Amino acid sequence: MRYNQLNHASTADRAVAGIFVAGVTFVLGYTIVRTALGPVQQSTSVDTTTDAEIVIPHEATLWADFAKSY
Image (cartoon, rainbow, N blue to C red; front, side, top):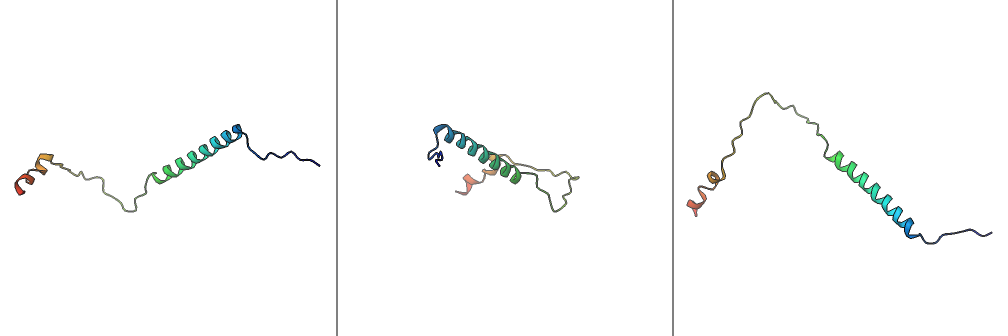
């Protein structure tokens, strides 16, 4: 009995396999990243009813004493 065996893959077969592997890799990577970056459940309650005033000074104010100290 003689069996037809293919010992080597053609270029088209390798291209299809490469595209398949790239697609699977993309889907898995995308899913993992979306899961990791998903919304985080906070274990402690945060009071959001109070307004916090955040003041960011100008950078000239931040560096004003630098020239005087050196």
